[in-house]
Image (cartoon, rainbow, N blue to C red; front, side, top):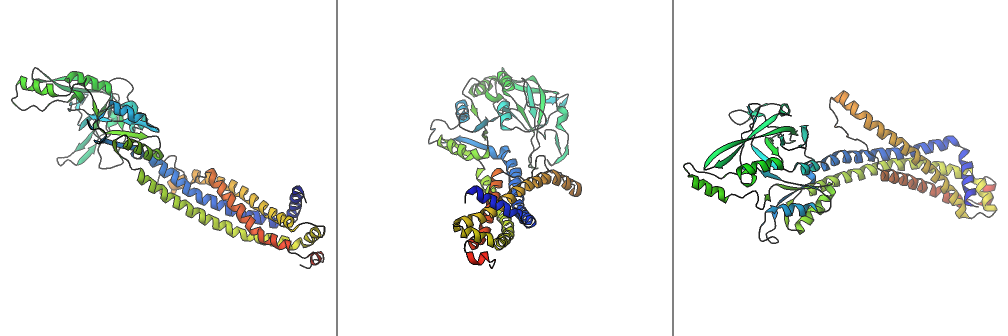
Length: 449
């Protein structure tokens, strides 16, 4: 019997009892759908939670502290050449730094004093690639544009405890005047430099962390250094009563803007958390001391992997329960078709052909159940992602984060579920198929099975 004839024989026999076939396929579809939907919760939570963490600079950032003295014996500080060298590593998204301005410049905005704690010079282009977060405004794009820390207007009481918060975004697009100090003929003077506030940093997730810094770009740093004549606008410590000659000597010892520049608080931002480990190892090979929290993310992924395996295992039990229906259906099919089996054996059909026919039928049941179950599971997943946030917001008065997915069905989960459904269907039909090959021809023709 040819394969095409076997398929036609299977289809004809399946049409004889459509109701029983429908219920068996329905049970298989329910089991397959339950498996996919249940496992999709694990995939959805991992994607929504872990990917949120992965997108966080805290995870993708690698802090570089200094160079290994065993490999860099002359100097362990980080310079321009090191920043460029690090930026050439594969999968590096950006290399950022934050250099501390060596003086507080008593800034004012429309007559109101700005009570910050420090000023940083940063590379805004690199910071933007790294995901520099803003709660309001935009990143600087022109000269003399700066960003203020979220807590720059935080008011503290006499004990230093925060007592009042004023919205820093009210200062957006306003002019800030920086009073840059410098020494001339032994006398401390001030030169005003104007800038425009264009952005406010985002609020830190750490409640105790107050961002009261000013962030300036390379252009403002160059103006400050041109005024002070020193790197990072740093001024020497001058004791009271020092003579102009002594002050001039102190200024002479300060690093000049034209000299080799070192960088502090250097961070390497990886394109994805999965790249962090490889970049960190490459940095160590080059002799850079660094630190990241990639190992902690690995533990989070391991936890979700265990959860997904557990959910798939529970879902597989539902498919196994459906296999009982397939076994009963195929057993009854063998009994009802005993005479047909006898005729096939009488005309010389090989037992393997008879076995294959019943395995094809059970496989058809598994395939149809898997297809229907997959379609239903995608529908359920879409409905859950669309409806559950509304229910949570309505009845629990909690707002679900934008883009949060409760259920995600990756293609390989669908393939795995369909494979399990097909495999279980084949196993369920194997024993009835084997029984069909053992039917005696004479008894079958007499319908005495």
